[in-house]
View 1 (cartoon, rainbow, N blue to C red):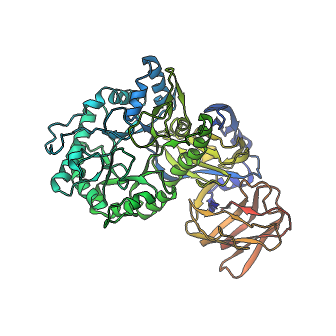
View 2 (tube, one colour):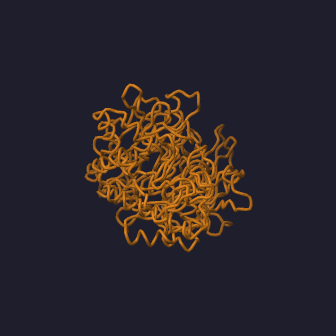
View 3 (cartoon, rainbow, N blue to C red):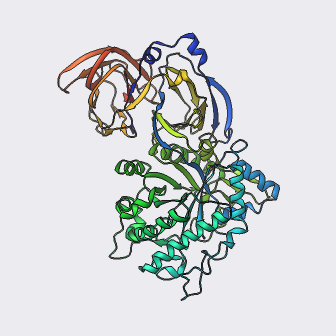
Length: 638
């Protein structure tokens, strides 16, 4: 139950418009927002509803405040992977049906505009072949350090034609490449399924040359590579028979030190990403670490501290253990390096119906990937297979319950899966080069039944807000920007995208400034009440008991702030607002001055005060009711 506390400041004449209402001419110039919705029962699948107009009407509802002036990471794109399996099932379709599916996937106007693909270098566990393969396989006991047998001929039949078609449909498509294993002759045990890279300078150089040859071969085939990692999931030593390899940070550094200069010389567009594994080290990865070796639970930090990190653009993450906040922690530790999110497959139980795993996947991916990943500094959001058959394959080892963006059915048709929409609500509307902008959000990936969201500013100046209702019941909330707002109701579990064009009326309004380092405390004490307050993790406090006079939440802003309005937002817990409240301030946390008091009438209470400078705020209950008292967001306007 974590939320955020923000300070919003307005500049110059915009203060008057934002706090006292815009003129009639300004109101008429405010645009409308277009809306697309996907529901968990498939009744609406990226269905465009009627547009909704911004107004200057006041609202007492939970409010998502968007501020385009506050920017975060730029976005590279959103998508999946054309694995060998995906290519095989797409080629089961007739040419007309395959063209239809590719258009639905990659065309930005007629489809969802997938804009990022993560391509296996050789086989992954998702292959339609009878054996796993690399691009330089040799008989047991033989080597090929000169790479005389290197060939991407396997990919020429199906994978590369699909990649070229994807690039034709979406010229802004970015390609990332990742190996599940180097050739077996480079590894201990000489098997694709397991082992480690041999500790030999010839092998480090040979592997770097192998990866460089791949980049050059793909570029010559019309598919330039934008990003590369040197090993998929380097701590995963057991993928159920699929190709894997353990690779510690010392060995990774040795390969990167050779690969970096090579790529700079022959393919400067190709950037290296590190790690390419989970948010947190999985217990199985620790258990499968060879005796005497360090499991390196802090792998991404160690790799960024390695001298080879000068060749890294940043770090890639997967979703299978931990949570998205790990990406923000790494960003805070090294903000000069980027964050990419590169794999998360939908999945289902053995006895789940397609309807059930559509619902479950849509809800989990919407809050964790669509919103959770992008709010935690990721420049991409990428799932796994682009397409699979109705049995979740073909695959050779590895995952037996994975899903794709689309499913190719036995009758020669294809259908869309939940991931088509959780990615599509981003990829169709958020263009490569867009920048994430500030927005208040009330939910989190752990699920607490609120509305969670993320906002972007496109290169053309338009704004995109993606919102997910985590609750099973409908939720009504307000979207506010620049002194204008609209109310909207989303069905339970649904995902929505709102877009509106660039507008001076909206851009000149109130501005959002995070209060980094603020803290909160309460009486009665709450387990959630003493958490750090910053742009991505703040206290959501609930009294846990019926409201009684004297209960309070206190916020230390970290430094003195000057404000003239305090917004007290109770979030989605309808009725859990302060029915009677008192707002007090202090410069030292000891001596308090009462600024205002009154009765709450809804989830949002705006308290206008004289211009006031203070470091501490205290909101105290002055009424006795049977409801709990919840605070999800506190905003200050200057």
